[in-house]
Amino acid sequence: MRQGAQELKGHLDVLLLAALEDGPRHGYAVKEALREGSDGRFDLPTGTVYPALHRLAEAGLISGSWSEVDGRRRRTYQLTPAGLQRLHADRANWRGFAAAVTALLEPRPWPATS
Image (cartoon, rainbow, N blue to C red; front, side, top):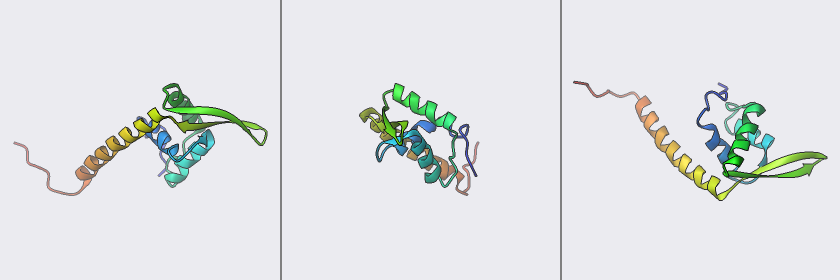
């Protein structure tokens, strides 16, 4: 099932930061990393990815630099130290949240209420 930007609301930033964790990427490569890394579930429109990358750059969580590849200008993004710190914190929060949701979704008897 393909997920859209609406389903990722509130989680897009951490996914973009994670896509940059292993090194710099240009915007389209970030978009493709999310799509491929999620087996196609997060095939986001460029109109969602690029504004989010710009917002993360404005916040100082990533930095961007321009280069020319095959006669085309591309902006390459990379994590800043603040972005890496934020990624680690968000990842820890996400793991705790996911563990709690998983526990609640497992079939089991629910506690009785009085």
